Image (tube, rainbow, N blue to C red; front, side, top):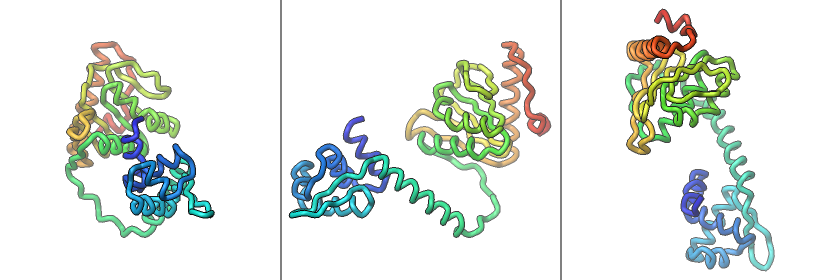
Length: 246
């Protein structure tokens, strides 16, 4: 991974660009003073000192006393683990303190960009209480292997319609035509995500929990499964009884 991408990823952990640049320099060069950090990175001395102070304040650097204060990079594993632990604690505090949500009246939500769509699919799989249906090309399915495996292990029913054979234990698989950039997800017969994925920032999907929309999309997927069975003589694995009557 090039330096630019490393810096971008470090910035996701609450570092400024200058802090991330100097953190990498500390990792590569060992303990540095503010003067040495400025010389190594080309950042002005005043900004280098501010960045080092910021790194120490954020738990990314330790200091050693001497004739001049030297800064030592905290290992990336330790730093990230501490940040994630802090965020988990904050999450629990927020959940406990947040006001009661208003009754769900969501209509049709547009989710844009591969990152946000990927996060939504992962959350749908993780939060499904009984079953999840996925319709997408095999390369996209691979992006969610961890969440799919966890769902199966937790006793969730997982059905996947995709273009290449899957060898995921416990997954009900139907091979169909190449979905290209089209994806569809149904969680617990309560919510649907459908649209395009794989176009980076240009990808858009529609998400809804509206019963009529969910029913129409579910009927479409059910009919596709029936057609696969007829044309390819797939095993007659019945749909969930609840699905069959909704």
